[in-house]
Amino acid sequence: MKSKERKHEIEGVKPFNEFFFRNCFWHQLIAGVSCLGVEAKEVLINYMALPKNDFESDESGILSAKEFERFFGYRCKPCGLSERSLKKRIDKGCPVIVGVDCFFLESRGDTYRKLHDPHFVLCYGYDTEKRLAYIVDHNYRNGFDFAKKVVSLDNVLLANRMYKKYIRRIRLTSRVLYPTKRCGTGNVLEAIDRDRAKGWKQNSEKNLRELRRMIDENIGELEEKSGKIILYLEKMKTSLASLAKAELFSENENNKVAVSELRNGYAVILSLFWKMRAQNNFEYVNKCKNNVLRKLDEIERLEKIVYDLLTETGNEKI
Image (cartoon, rainbow, N blue to C red):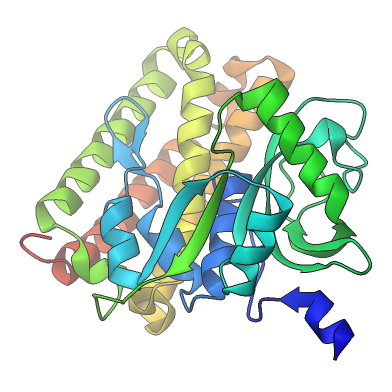
């Protein structure tokens, strides 16, 4: 009985490690809300990046953060951290996303005593007798091998204090996730504003036309904007991986093929840009111009299918 009282662990935490989504905070949020009954796909779909003009992206969410939390019945609230408050929150079934400085985090061999790196881990349990913390983390920067780990409780608390001292210098260094009353039913895609969906489609079409123009007419401009274009292509590829999890696409074979082939199309163009940038040779695109332009045509065709489906699914207003 005593050992039971000393060890507390929230059940149902599911790390997300299928692909890298935004940054470590978002992976910890996905893992944290999973024990509150919110599926990973809902977070991924709501917060996927959507096209804006000039290779920018809209990452504000289909629903705003407050609307999303209210819809799915939880709150993500800034908090300070102490051993006492951490235990109290976990005892109430509320996981905590803890800000840490990886320079002091012993479980991260890639950064420990090497690099001051702002980071987040999800703490969902503790053992006072053995001085252990149950966390979700990955093994190296920008990796997506997120998994449950058992580490030193004192070390996590130290890394949080150093995060506050050296990196953020703010009082509220962490986020607590706690359940509230769910106010919505159905899925996020049903909340899409049709006008916004039409705007995303138009923005993507403009970006693809601009990309085609630079490939066809202005290699210098293509090179100059390559960093921005690569980031945009990466975000579109990740967003399509998120969108593929929606029932609209996962449960209909034709729709599944359309979104999968569209993602592959973006991956092909992205690979070309990575290669040209690594070799510092953007003239290379001239050798495969016809194939690249055909691939852009295919992306446009598939995007019309995908965005038309989103427009049909969405509402007139949120």
